[in-house]
Length: 432
Image (cartoon, rainbow, N blue to C red):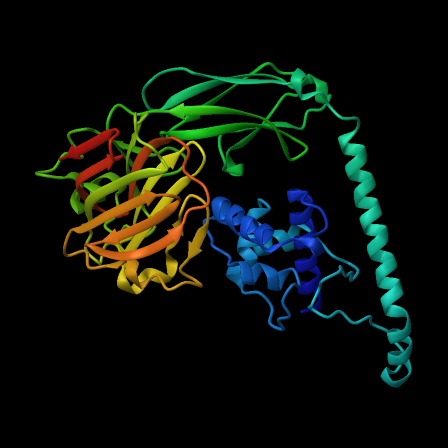
């Protein structure tokens, strides 16, 4: 267990270096909230703020983190899992850092009654000295890597969208020669797994976007974002896509058109995926366009939908209803009543996890269609399900401009209608 504690401290340190937020001893609650969001964005695992505070020693907790938590931390650092992190970071000597509540005791070959007093006298200054040396060494290495400040006005980064269909290639024109390094990356979006190494003295790089959406591509050097450029991949109306890596499955307009609904049946899902079981297999219906005269600070989204999978095909029958914006996104999750623990709500400004919030109101009886109304007015978000108010919260920031609507179903799903409107402004109304 002692060595596991050392691995956890090392993992913490690597995350701190990656974030470059300064000394973790002075991180605020907002910092841990942001870290929780970043981990969820990358790993799709929601670690609560309280869990992260325990790991960083802000709250005393004697138990060691669970395997699921450790795997999420390792995944955030681009390791496959905790085992992969341990294998690639061999530890020979114990070390400690400030704020650690997993107590580490120096070892000695002398008898316990002789060694213990001596250990208590010297352990604190020795450990503090080691900490200072590590911090100074890390700062020196960081300084050497960064070198002299770079004039970012001399760094070029722009994107050209090749077509108006899916998939879509994007040509990135860049000039990062001022960095004098080959450690330059282009990242397609918020997802660090879509980061590709490019020649530091290169001029062009191309990427394929298989999914529509509003993306902010990034030019990354020394693990820091140096330039950003908006890449908006639009659709011509609604597009149905079954998630699959590395290449998704596209559905034709005829395949997603039902009698009075847009969707996909269990049988078609089975035929496309080759499996009668759809757990953790998702289909998306996306409409990405500029919704003119829709005010993201004053709008209503009204829709009727259901997950139409049999419970034997999709145990939890999850559904996400999304609004995509230029500043953020809104994700409203639903599932069978027994799976609400796995739900995560994004209000455009904050995450709410089913792991530490009561999400029972988002549990559904999918034998019936569900009627959802989402309203934003005067920086306040209200969510109604089947004419019942289920969520009421301030919204600290707006979506920006609304650029897309997306439905995600774990398994088969049906959508009967979608309406997006601003009082006295624009109206988008679709009945299938």
